[in-house]
Every structure is written in structure tokens, then in C-alpha cells.
Amino acid sequence: MAFAPLELGTGKISTLLKTYAVPGIIAQTAASLYNMVDSIYIGHIKDVGSYAISGLAVTFPLMNLSVALGTLVGVGAMTMISVLLGQKNYGDAGKVLGNVLTLNTIIGVLFTVVTLVFLDPILFFFGASENTITFARDYMLIILLGNTVTHLYFGFNGIIRASGNPKLAMGLTLFTVVANAVLDPVFIFVLGMGIRGAAIATVLCQMLSLIFSLRYLSDKKSFIHFPKPAFRLDWKIARQSLAIGVGPFLMNSAACLVALFINQQLKKYGGDLAIGAYGIVNRFTMLFAMVNLGFNQGLQPIAGYNYGARQYSRVKEVFILTAKWEVLVTGVCFLLSEFLPGLAVGAFTSDRELADMAVKGMRVMNAGFAFVGFGMVTSNFFQCLGMVKKSVFLSLSRQLLFLLPPIYLLPTFLGETGVWISFPISDTLNIIVSAIMISGLFKKFGKLKDGDDPSILGSSIR
Image 1 (cartoon, rainbow, N blue to C red):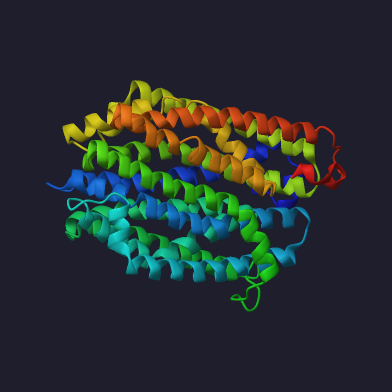
Image 2: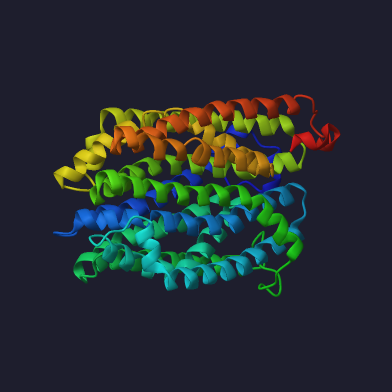
């Protein structure tokens, strides 16, 4: 059954979360598998697979920076659209869509031009060596040329989901995954293009989904569609959207910085293969993080709509239910990491030295991962409600305040192991802070009745 946006404020919370989260979970899991497929195929390129997968891992900071710029526009737009639908302001919701088209195009082109000019120095700074620079460069050249396509594809996919059509958003993502899984071996092995072929397949599949999204959002029969003219920038809406998107932007920018420091430390204390080991562990762990991102995407329109409609009891209910599921997911990741790490690592590489490093890293890195889902949903929850400062603080404290210092200090005493140990330390501290902050918010909600204007509590609600 497809839910109209109005039912976000009236339907049963568990049913709504299932309706909106399941397509998101499938889509995000598929998106994670999409990246894993690239890594798995690249890791088995004859004679060079180990260095190729290390070269791919070197690109993670730059990829995170690209994602950060995309979320700066996309996440803010999704949040605004959900709240505007709750307020039944359909005209401004369409204007937000037009802003996504214009802003993502401008930002995507600028990012591509700047990074292409300085690509080699950037990759060396991010941890590339003479052994891995060729692989990193070949992959990123193609990805950067398709950067604008990627930004628009993910941005429009999120808006389609937030506007009440999560199944279509899921279908488009599944298409890109299946198409990529088919095209990857063709470009990599049959056509002999190696790691460059994996990048071509990635961009090509996203381009096909983007074309369909543009056609769908151009149709006036769609619930939300492009205004005329489509390329029109409303600065008031743009400022509001970017302000909301600052939280996830800073979070992903911090992820870029953290990945940079991780690569540098692993290269210093473990060499190129240690970076490749982190790439493997990161891909595996991200599979579970993406499942939770699917839950967060299901939470986003429900929480945003009901907060806009001043139904605080429903806002609280959807948070609690989502948190339970996300903790279950990260708990499963923890168990697999501790007891069956070899099973996961074996899919990526047959190199014994690289596999041993990845198994060791996985056990240590995910030792505190069991309750990370609680921190993930809390940060996203604040962002869904437009509480930018709280969302930004949680995002940055986990990665910058709690993670970076151990990454730099512990390897001095523990070598490569010190990098891996930094993660459970950061995870534990972040969970404690998240619990304190969400308790404070719920106390404020407890003073409000459904329908009350939140401003009666003053600015403290934000």
C-alpha cells in the first residue's frame, strides 16, 4: 500500500516506518553492495589486486568530500520538503526541488574542475604511494568526470523518497546496483579496463537512473515537480536548505578528514597493505551502517512531517522504534566482526598478508560497534527536526573530538594497532553523549502537548 503524505500524520507509526524504511534499507544496502562489488572485483584483478584495492581505499577521503557537498544540498532539501508537506505548502516544496537541480549542478562542476587540476597532489596527500597512485588516479579521473551526475542522482532519489514514493526511489537504486554488478566484470575483465572500468560502470549506471528521475520529476502529474523555469535559484530557500544541510555536510567533511588521517597513520605504521585492510573493513562495516541509513531515511519524513504538524508524541514514538532497530543492526555487525571476520574478508582478497591484516583490524575496530546505532539515529533525529546545532555537535564530536586524538596518539605506543583501537573509544564516548542529549530533548517535549507551538519553550527547543 502506498501512503499519501497526509497519512504520515495519521497512520500507525510502526506501519509507516516499515513502509518508508524498508525501501530505504533495501536501497541503501544495495548502494553499499554497489561499492562492495567494485571492491571485490578490483581486489581480484590478476597480479595487482592487493595494490588496486589499496589504491581504491586511498580515494575514500576524496569520495567523502564529494558526498559532503552532495549532502549539503540534498539532506537540507529533503528535510525542508518533509516539513513543507506537513504544513501543506506544496508550492514551496516544488521550489526546493528546483534549487536542488541548480545548486548541485553548480557545486558538482566546481568540485570536478578544482580536484582534477590538483588530483595527483591530493591523492599523495591522502596516502597514495608510487605503488598505488596509478590505481587511485585511474579510478578518480572517471568518478570526478561524473561527479555532477552522482550529486544529482542521489539528491533526486532522496527527494522522490521524501515526497511519498519510497518504492520508486528503491527501484532506481536497485537498478543501478544490478546494472553495475553486470557491467563491472565486462568493463574490468572482458574489455581489460581494470579499475578504470569499475569507475565507468559506476557513472554509467547512475546516469541512467538520473535520466529517469529527471523525467519523473518533470511530470506535472508527480506530487512534486520542477517549477518553471527549472533552473531557478530562490536564495531564501537555498539559505534555509543549506543551513539544515550543514550538519551532514560537516559530518561527511569530518569523515574526509578522519579518512585522511587514518590513511596517513596506516601508511606510516603498516604500509600500503594496511590501507587496503582498512578499505576492506570499512566496506564491510558500511554495509551495516547503510542499513541504518535506510532506517534513518524512513524516520526522516515521518519525524519531519509530524514535527511540522506539532504532533510531538508521534515524533518521540518514531525515534524510539527506529533506535531499537538500529541497535539490533549494529549488534549483528559486532558479532560477525568478532566471531566470523575471515568469512567477510575472504570475499575481497585471496592475498594472505592482506587478509590477516584485515581480520585483525576488523576485530579491533568494531569492538565497540554494538550500540553505535543509537548514536546514528540520535544525530539524524536532530537533523530531521532542523536542530542543526545539536546534529552538528554530535556528528563532529564523534569524529573530531573523540576519534582524531586517539588516532594520532595511540600509534606512537601501539603502532598500527593504535589506529584500530581508536574506533571503539570514539564509539563509546559518542553513545554516552547521544544518550545525554536525547534525554534533554525528550524532557522538553514532555512539556508540550500535541498542537502546542514549540516557541512557547523559547529558543531552548533548538
